[in-house]
Amino acid sequence: MDESIPDKTYFRIGEVSSILGVEPYVVRYWESEFKSVRPVRTGSDQRLYRRKDLEQLLLIRNLLYRDNFTIRGAKKQLSRKNPDPSRDGLPNEDRRLLREVKAELSKIRELLS
Image (cartoon, rainbow, N blue to C red; front, side, top):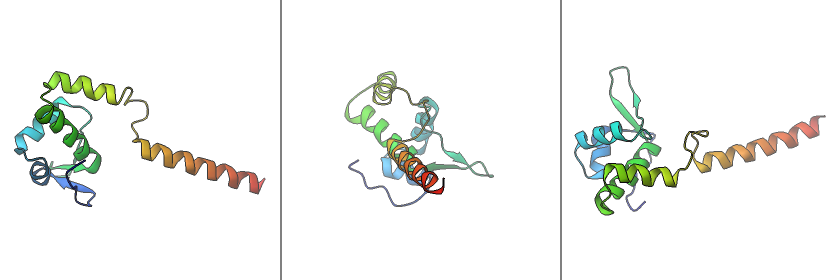
């Protein structure tokens, strides 16, 4: 991404809208249209966006504003980039780390048996 995302775990909607360069109501609308954006809700019902939500929103913004896709077209484009997002819901990097951990655990099991 060409935008720099601060090194934080959670972002409030005001921070997200500043990074994206759109109003908070636009972020809330995109959240309602694109099911891949699911912020965590606090006890006081505030939205807290994770880094992956922000990255997804940046992609959505670029599809809509830079590439001139409609909402429907952006949804189709995102489904092509993520052909089966419900498979396990993990980003590729997390999936790779899990494979590495599994391989290391298998080695440890062999050593112990």
